[in-house]
Amino acid sequence: MEMEKLSLVIPCYNEEQTIPLFFDAVEKIQSLLENTTIEYIFVNDGSKDHTLTILREMVQQHPTTIRYLSFSRNFGKEAALYAGLEHATGDYVAVMDVDLQDPPELLPQMLRLIREEAYDCVGTRRVSRKGEPPLRSFLAKEFYRIMNRISAVEFVDGARDYRLMTRQMVEAILSMTEVNRFSKGIFSWVGFDTKYLEFENKERSAGKSTWSIWTLFKYSLDAIVDFSDIPLAIASFVGLFSFVAAVFFMIVIVIRTVLFDDPTAGWPSLVTIILAIGGLQLFCLGIVGKYLGKTYLETKKRPIYILKETDNNQKNEKKQKKVL
Image (cartoon, rainbow, N blue to C red; front, top):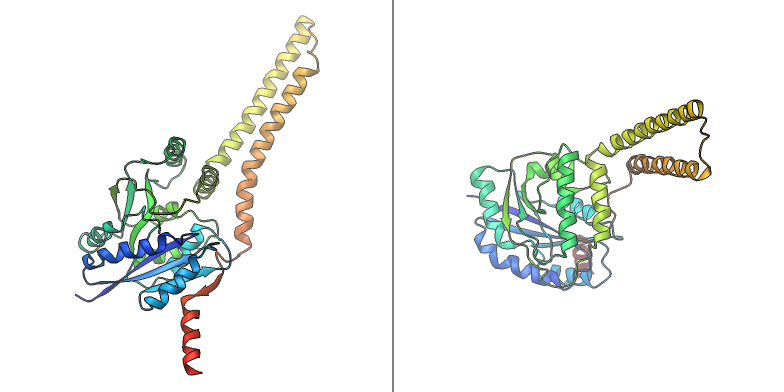
């Protein structure tokens, strides 16, 4: 059997402590990956610590197996994933977090399932959220429940970005060049035969997570807009309901005035109605504006990310010094 290449795409943002730990952990299980060589692709997403310095040093130590891409600024994890997939050259490509919350020891089993059972993708999902704040766990479960109700795409509760894919599936993902990206949805949208492996939640190996409840909330809003138009239908329903309610109350007021000679109440009720209807209008306008804003960003055709430096720059500098 010929040697095949497995590319590992690893987004990094302020991960100077975890990168060496991650590399050592994967190297320990490399012997279990039969007839497979590993290509590491670390994507430095505008880190403000010494992440880039560590990546430069690691490339010098392992020039044939480690590559890195460094952005001009922080473009976000989704852009880092796309960049890594775009530069991966392996027959198989895996997406992993560098903090070791994605256990590398699952890679041999994932690779075997793709090779022997003809799956196009083997993903992972956490069966528990032990160690997470209760509020964050509750909101995450509710997010998956809501998304599965309002979207035609299936969202697996507890699913991680950690997955191993065939080259065919990677190319399908790369064909989706939208700027507003939600990878979990994209992985499901492109289809292909997928199997999920379950594992217990693991704590970070070092450092602190940059994901707060607020950033996760904004991320979930982007996911809803990207993969469902139900909010637009809700806005239409709210507008229709407000109109019907206004007509009903208008009829009631006319009947009271004509039959019972009961004049309309004073300004407090009028102000309340105006504020209620105005609030509903602004709410609906906000929903429409969110979709319009996403469309506006897509029409700009801006790049998903901008590279400032890669390991090739470093290698070329070495060659030039040797020539001189």
